Length: 540
Image (tube, one colour):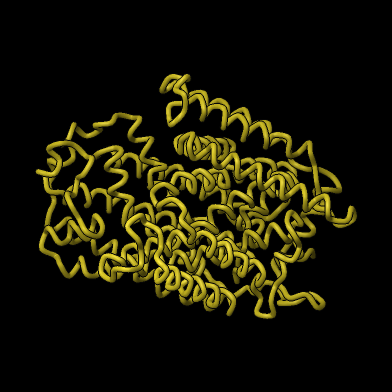
């Protein structure tokens, strides 16, 4: 029988991660990641792509991510380890799947922190010019300020996870209050019901527009529920709190974003929609909600939004620097990348991984594409990371059936494959341009994995089970082919609607193969024993 034990901070002479985060700390970690720069721009971008039907886009994204969140909730409670999105596939399928999931997760997480910092400086530049140049890149002054912010995030993370959680709690209370206040003010002061069928009707761009809006900021805005799971190795009562935190944060975030879109559409000046949805708020010098607030005479709200445009992205950047460090920690712990990435300081944090996140963040401040152009790439990488979880759940329920599961996904035989289909739809809708770049990034990552594997002494190499991971490369390769031939940035060889059937059928087939491919025998027992030790679980 397996039961929870109080996790020590050390085993022998090796420090362990500290279990200092409670339920609300975990909830705010996820909610703080969900509410970032995405809420400031997501409604506008979605409306430009889908018109009033963008409301359906938010509902679709909420349902898709809610099902994926429920899958992660079961896994996170059953296997409470840090960097869980990389560790669940490793437990189920071995190193190839574990590395691929962790690499995709790390790429999106380590990129988001500097993206959020740049977003904060871009907004600040409207009031304090000189931080961002006309082409959108940081000036020398902007680079110094951005580096100072990243350094501050790094210090908070190094001091310890308790300070990170406490700092984030204060920030999240503000970040949640401002969007809610914005919804209330706009609904009361300016609501034009005619806007919901103006500019070409409720769905001026049809079903294609509704689906295209998901990777155009909608999924990006709602993602982040998994951050409580990434901190699973530092949760005080993981079996009880992780699943509750993930579900709570996802529900709150979805309701807030849905109401923001409704308030945004209703507050638009109807005259701006005479020529469609290309420029629904007219000329604004800051952002959509601040422009609308100024237009309805709520200048005080615009001032708060100016402040929030710095606090929200900065708060999310603080979290993602920490959670990207947990993912690289997981890759090091599982020996997919150098073991030094799993080194834990005396304060119980993955010090080397935190420093690496800071360094990569500094590199990301070089003149890379804008926030909007990176959204599709980050969304696609996140969906790939999410997609591993349902297959891992199907496999682990079969090969590790006696594991205590404080939260069990209801109707898992139906919802788990549907969650996998949802993740693949998001990847497909992200478009060929984003997916092709992600494919290149995956090849680079696998090359790094291969080099590290070859250089690791045979006795210390991570568990490799080619049979259990055999479904991974056909899955990613098949998605790339469908994306290339599809309707979202591809060659449009596969007709619309038929492409969705193809993605769904392909997903179900891959899920069936993967869920039957979990590791067995000595390999499975070796991996589970290693994860059990870190999770603070003892056998009685």
